[in-house]
Length: 53
Image 1 (cartoon, rainbow, N blue to C red):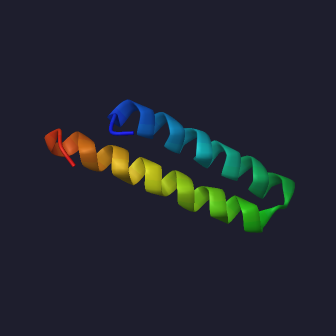
Image 2: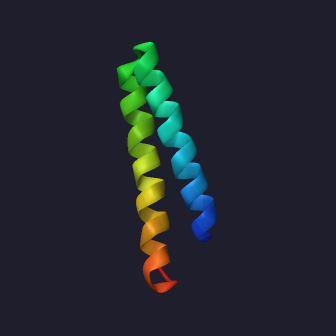
């Protein structure tokens, strides 16, 4: 999974899922999915700076 767009999309999806879980009151799973989404978004933006890892 080296593609920038794939990582950004998956990161955004995980963050949206975590927000829905926080709204529904499931904060433990919401925080877990937020961490996963943040990791995907961070790696996607990190690739975007210079085109490499």
